[in-house]
Image (cartoon, rainbow, N blue to C red):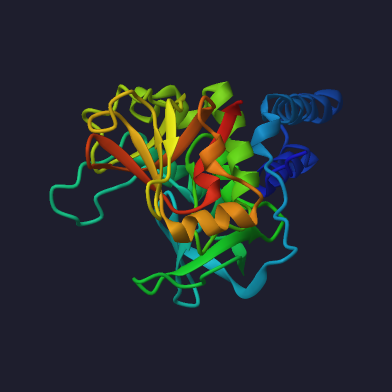
Length: 296
């Protein structure tokens, strides 16, 4: 159950202080405020959805990177700590704000995602954990975040529909867990999943999607490995239809997980990644968590 906020507890104690209550009668002085407080408490417990509580961070296999209070939230997946570190929440992608980038449009629900992270983390002390590469090319710390009460920040953002699962070949820790929470939020239509901008697209709906991050669902028409790269074709014309490409380095990761994408012909898949234009829309898959097998 989600902890009752400190502000509520302070208010509860204040309204039940006889010295602060209206002097209607001894009976009214106690029961009226107490009744209001009790109703509010019950309301808090009842209307707070279970998904808002969030799971605890599975720390096994992660490396601790210390802890620090949060001094500011930059956007829905980036924040600043009191110790000076800027942290990119690894494993998720929230809707983006321009943040000074020219000609960069604000993604739908970007302000709401930032506000959601502020509610979760602003002023709170967070523990940082690395499950892979710990610093990105911008010098930001890449970490899974755990609040002082045990709440896993990334999972809370995804379960509320304020972010998508977003992993890298050198940062795959807990990606499968986050994919599960994303499926839950999407099925419930929470947050971004109620906005068509973030809809899961069909392979035939990618004409305007170049240079954007998309989730694509479709059935593999053919699978081939002419040389070192494997291709999953989602249409009959590989020169124009949607294709997934997996290079030799990525194929080794699939093999290590006991997966052979060459056997996925006829399977229905959900693929995530950045769309590029190369003989039609294409996603370069770099690690297994980018592909979910939906039907065999």
